[in-house]
Length: 101
Image 1 (spheres, rainbow, N blue to C red):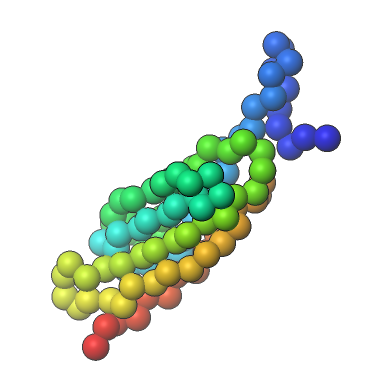
Image 2: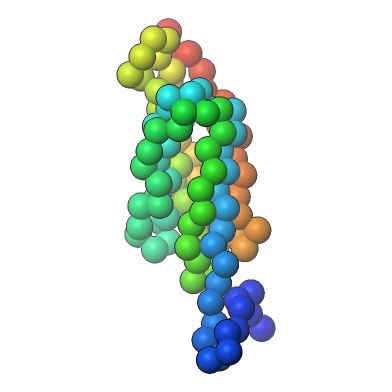
């Protein structure tokens, strides 16, 4: 049994998985690291209140480390760090950034 797709050559491929972070402060840096496979998935600035990106998959679940920060402009926000599991259905995390100070 597999969650992958078998092509005409009999090779199994797996669909990319969607990572979604909501309730961001626009201009925040989003860092997502796959601790299962030891690979950085995203390290970029989100200019929206939602971040979405696709991560490639080998068909297994992956543990994620997620960090979000916005300290470059005023007002500054406390950094947020959390973990999650990226499954076949993806992952959706609500990030609640709080003003620092």
